[in-house]
Length: 411
Image (cartoon, rainbow, N blue to C red; front, side, top):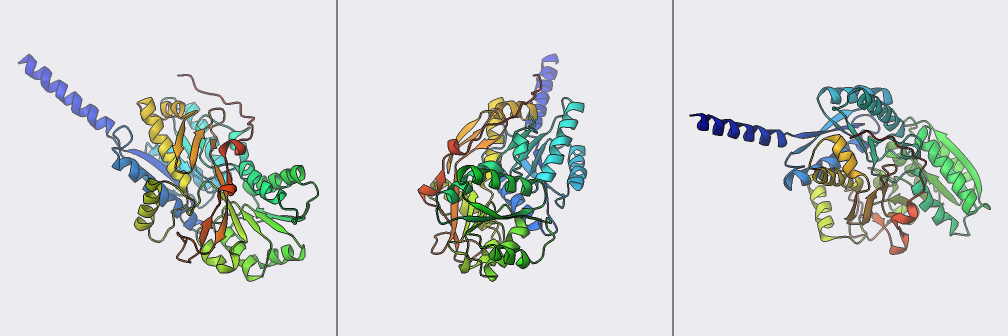
């Protein structure tokens, strides 16, 4: 009888252990899901959800399903902290965010404080698009991992492109008036001064985030300045409205963007922008890649027919999360963080590395061009983004030094 009871107890414990290991791991997605930047956040959520579905179809993260849980922060740092606390109260220990460096800054501070006060209940921040360089320099945190190349890394590609063209003598810089936009402006001025001191910065302007409905007055100032090139870090609605005004007003100077592929931009630009608008990114839909990646793109665009594949870095983030959990043999955020440091894998667009010193991803970048006659168009326009091999910048050339002095928890 005792043997029967022991066997039954062992079986019950085994089933309990299986249930625990199969418990769903939730990721809080804290980004704008309403308002002028809602389309950007919604597109990001869909890409994260699709990436998560791939892990689940392959057996989950150490056997546990992943689930994305949306929280609308309205691009407000204050509202983001409210939503972060809601996620924590629900027991969610992984946070994904990307739209807005001011938001990311607030989340980093809050995560640091929470983890210091709650040992054993730590949370991990997976940043897929907030690119203020400070986050992997003086503001670096063990609890923060960035899967997008930061401002200075992308600006290096943009200013190299400008520096190689002797016909460019005047540059206009325009961006959003918050930490990210200011970082873009600073990087543009500093890098151009170093690479082409003869170039004149004929405009360096910041505008309110998400409040400008018509950028025509700004574009008229750019045209009046006789700028030979324009640099902007604008994203979301601000990117769409800026390029629409530029094309409608007849601006002919090349426009180098961080987020020219923002949802709605292609429709707003149309054929008039072909060959004129460029984007610095880790993904180009018409660049040669693997059959597996092509199948992924097609599956996403079939699943979410109103969206084009754009946030490839969401897949990198989920892939690293799953890979680190497997390496650690654990779904605990602390174990995963240690396992993720220094991790490398061969992605469909080159080698991707999570630098251990500062938790900054290192990846190849592309200077892509808005083009006609493409195999894969965007927004059913017949137009899309292309890049040649010459427009590909290897990860090693995008990796600046870091000033990060990271404090790591004891294990």
